[in-house]
Amino acid sequence: WYSRDGFFKKIFDRDLRSTDMSLILYFGFYLNDLYNALRRKFSHSPFSDSAFIVYRGQTLPRRDLEELKEKIGCLIANNSFLSTTCDRNIAFKYAIDQKYTLPNEPVLFEIHISEKSSHRPFADISDISHVKGEILLSVNTIFRIDSVREPSSDKHFTSRNLWEISLKMCESKLTGLNDYFDVIILRLAEILRRISPDNDRTNKKMLDRCRLYYAHDPIELEKIADFERNYEADQAIRW
Image 1 (cartoon, rainbow, N blue to C red):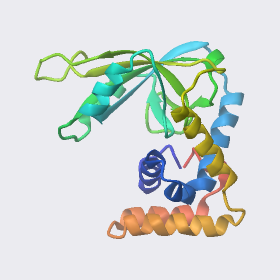
Image 2 (spheres, rainbow, N blue to C red):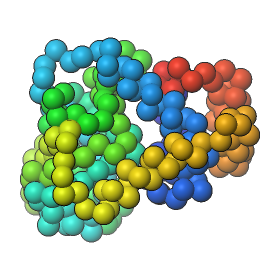
Image 3 (spheres, helix red, strand yellow):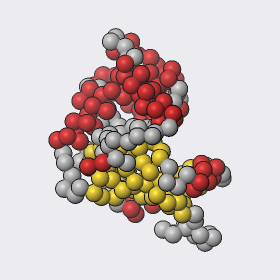
Image 4 (tube, rainbow, N blue to C red):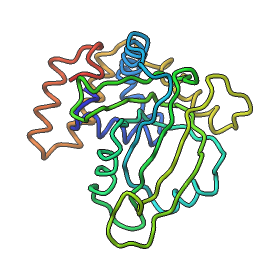
């Protein structure tokens, strides 16, 4: 269900990024299913290369980009599952094709990954995804900011005139993490601990929230009904 754009992925990603526990708990059962599915795929599908590069194209507010520029050498953690691709051109297209308004600006992330340094699961899900060469990274993966390059003054978008940020996945064992990272990781543990054993009730709350959000979109409402009828835990990644 995560590998397709639609009602579920949009709301799930938005609520997870919000760090609002009351919202995230609606998706607690699915967060657990998705993390476990990614972990299984990670353990059963080793990469042929021990180190490789993936890319992600998106937009970010100018203030966030300026803050990242000031934090070169520091650590950051993603607060949602992160969809990336092995194809730089696809990521570049995602960055420049998204509708955005100032102060948001297009940015291309270059992420250096090593299986040896992985402390969170990641997996190639391109066989079940509509995105070529898609690599899905787990929530709370920690990276070091290696470099931040500002765009050129050229008015036409090229591969050299959007923000480019280079990240490197950190070692599996880190010391000296600040309180912010500790809080993020503890929050995920708290979410998983507080998942209700009464999953039917949790599912209903989540689906009610989705139906309210897409009340005037019959196509998405049908997808929600399909999810309610057919969802199984082992389908957290695959639709």
